[in-house]
Image 1 (cartoon, rainbow, N blue to C red):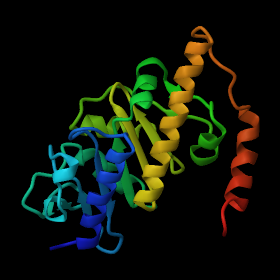
Image 2 (image 1 turned 90 degrees about the horizontal axis):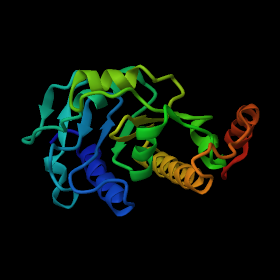
Image 3 (image 1 turned 135 degrees about the vertical axis):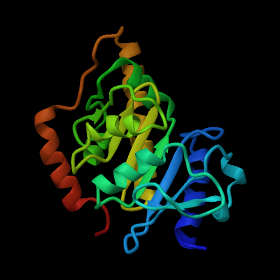
Length: 219
């Protein structure tokens, strides 16, 4: 079985996302690229997370062709393969249906800098795509249109959230941080009578991020 470790990791991150409440039912999907071969392990289509085994995870090529596996790959395979092609520094992709991020996708063109932690991890804002028809190349294109080399999260119009990292821990952690920021933003809008709440000063964010990246953690 190709990419055994990567397939097991896809199963594990799906269960972790389910426990953390950022996916439900069969919604959402995850992928992990093996850097040497370029092959991608991706969630199977339409299977509840607790039922998925490593053998159910599908291995596809960078252009979405099945290389190994008996199941159909995720319907969002074109989205995942696009990210892996466009962002060679990224190995892990996590697509969630996070509630508050989806709320923001319905009311704003971007999630603004409402929460310091989110600014440190993803920058001044998280872009919201135009609407794209799910499961199509156009859906992938709607994400590609807002990508930069530094992008680590994109909110999908009327749909959900997609996050990127070197590992699943990183990508899922980013998804949780963005969801918390979206929750704070939605609640702040409500508490403020629908008026834009106070935001993190944009001019301070580059220095904040630089200090965070240089000093945070144990090295």
